[in-house]
Image 1 (cartoon, rainbow, N blue to C red):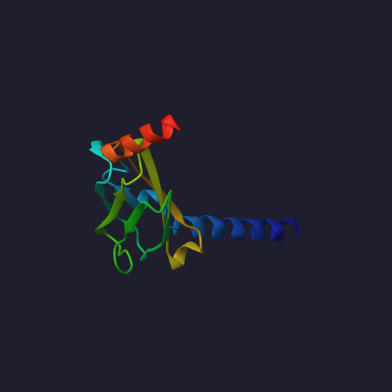
Image 2 (tube, one colour):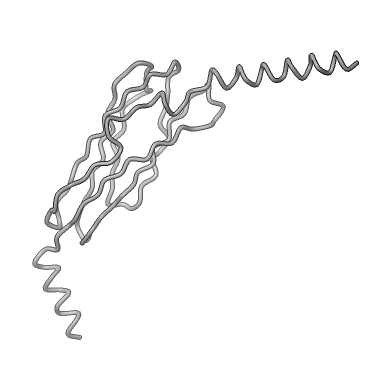
Length: 147
């Protein structure tokens, strides 16, 4: 009886180990840069950041709707599925209107495949820099300060 239980437990352990070995990992998705800095810009500019990545996994991936900090950030994803051994680009656009001072924004990209049993690989893309207030914003601040 103990021998049978041992064989069953060993079989279950091997199946569990095998299932993890075929799963996609975070290392399969390699970004050139995950953080980008921008120089001081005037308020009102629209900035564009390009994040290139290489996918070295074995199964096609899809991207779930990205998580962004605010509506000032727009994410443009690759069309269709991410194919194995392919180079891809994610573009992020940031509208600096009404954004003043130091800005640091993060976008979480979630990759998923049918082979991952609805688990995702999360990658965080960051951009940061300083936005200088426009003349109109400075004048409005002065008017409000006097009240």
